[in-house]
Image (cartoon, rainbow, N blue to C red; front, side):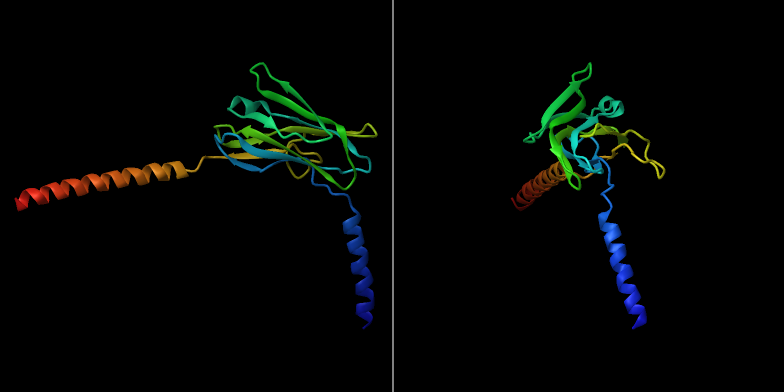
Length: 196
């Protein structure tokens, strides 16, 4: 009985401590894995508000490696209350995108959707991101990923395209069906000749 009286307040204090800490998940680009060469794949930026003041700007910089290997942003979803600002590189590909004019309060998160072409080359691709808070604090997610990184860059892992896709299976099935039909017709013709 004595142990229970001590354990219950301890658990309650731990729960209050755990749930009162702000969400420290950082800015991410999702899904975090994508098949190489995918076209018009829907991604989203997820950015939790990690401090007491609201976020008034969210930005994303598309890595040069992503762009040089065939990756690009095709379009963005309109988000009411936020203004989209886009900068392009010399090749006409999206280099930076930022959302301003809105406000995301503490203990919420922002999600902005976009359609992207995924690079042809498998590998780890990083993006730079930033959040500007109403008090002027700017948090930049520009650190190399690792255990010691306080503000790591968002990462998308591009994996090799699967060997068997729906299109490949469909073409293979049609080829097998046509081959079986040809064998059947030859067999039928040979059978008719031998019976004649």
